[in-house]
Image (cartoon, rainbow, N blue to C red; front, side, top):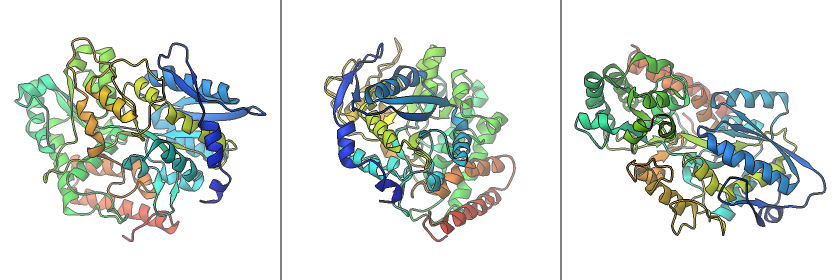
Length: 477
């Protein structure tokens, strides 16, 4: 372990402070929250910067009350501040530059480029794996740097990224079960646009959904930014083919608005009835259940689309990763809080309306933690995950049962943004600077596909070279 880990909390302290669960029932929250109690000589502080969740009940009914009760039970003054998704990067950079701010900061994409400025969280990651079982691979690959052998963050959960489609529209063109491969989007999506006046909703702009879509497309076309050894390999014929495909898709089934979309635009288009298919999580569907129930009843889901050779990959939509900046004076307390959160992840799943999937599927549900509808015999988060996906507790009256069942296999066709390698600091910078959606948008707007790929390759090579000089990225190319 590195310098910071030796100063961190010990395994004995973990067991003392996070091991003895005492049930505390939050007012109006339903299922029991288990709060580890610890006697403290003096009041401590913990400041948390948390993204404003797409599903408001996660913040209002679970996370904020949980943080408050955990603090009261453990002699900690906990402050939780919420921030919009698009503001996380700039706010984190400002606090690190100032050398003060929040002790725990939650990112929703791998924050690997922050590694030089945040603590190595190897200790809390190892303790979590001892207590809760093996972490899902894509979560480890989104928080661990194999070159430095450090965990620059702690991943507690992730979000599955299926395709959301309007069944009535696809039925009218002879494809009631939705698209199976990328070419189906052109074959049937173009007909829906021409005959029914509804376009596809895949962005090509500087926002997270466009970033995820670009990667899913490339992986399904058997290409990527890097190989498993962190060599840059993007400039190849398969990438050119994928970029040419997106140009065809744009011309046949979409409109220019997709070049200026924000992270909520495809959600809004689906809810408003202006999109026949989007590549997203279930958040748009949840919003439709509240705002336009008839649209929600018409939304169904498909797994990652197949590429020309049958390869099927999707990028996890959102990945929840905490970092602790080096300036924090409350790192040990922050680590205790992380473990307590994992002990209550059944509530995180439920109050996010199944948007959050756990990073530790083998975590056992605390004894006595009941109060959930439609769960029989569930003892682990995996059991709970599958039971809810089979029989959605938030299904509307009259809505088809089992619509979310496809998500049970999400860990088989979702992967991390650095696939087939790790989410290194170089990959983090490529992601945060939107090189891939820019590449695709340039070609769709007229640039030759091979030129757009070459341009992206030069930017990516420069990024990787800079991080290699700092000893934080592997590979040679």
